[in-house]
Image 1 (cartoon, rainbow, N blue to C red):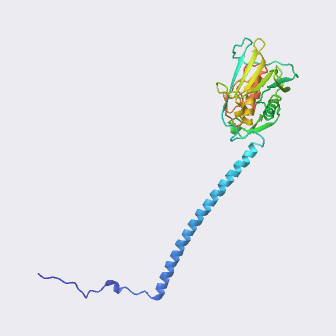
Image 2 (image 1 turned 90 degrees about the horizontal axis):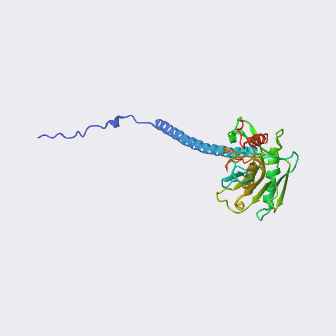
Image 3 (image 1 turned 90 degrees about the vertical axis):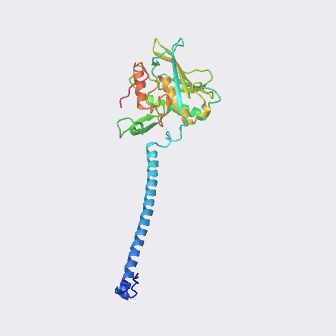
Length: 304
């Protein structure tokens, strides 16, 4: 058997490649250096873009917060109801209308008073009646301060405009004129221990068995379609903030003047106060105007 050995004289083909002189080597190094610089610049540019993007997003977030704060100050002036953190819990209300026999009735009647006479709203004396709480109640009765609220916040029309809301019943009802029966607008308030007054307000720390924060009981004369007396009770008052006391008192006075509950969750007279704006709105004023003009209903369909 014959073996074929490796040809040890065979040349390496790489040895035949032309040699790179020094100038060409320098050019190659410059090209490699240039490529490396480009890669480094791209990395730096990418890093810079990321940093600037982060800064821009942070600036946008800060501006968004500033705009939100500014808009809050514009839409909700100082001293009016704050949107966040004011009502800890939803407050519910109940009401009862009875005739002279004590039977519950399902009709809606108004007060029949002499035009110009004082209308007495008295607070029952009790340890729960502090000066702060009395100031809140008086403000709900007597205030003529208004609040302009954009319709878009309460889903009312026309959009792009605002509506005037009232902090006190004197300001709201003072806009009504020309009704068949005089609307109570001349108020007298006092602290009483005898329960006198056309409307009485009692503050108590007792809890209502049905969970109500406020309850209004009105006695009426069906034959003359008139309210004779309304008794308001605010329950568990030590657990109410002053803003909550303000809202539930304003609601219960609506019942005492003759309003029923509303089916609009954004309305002051909704059975459970959910709105961030528990003020007397144009619909409430319209309902009172129609009620005292002979419409024996506590609710109306508002024209928005």
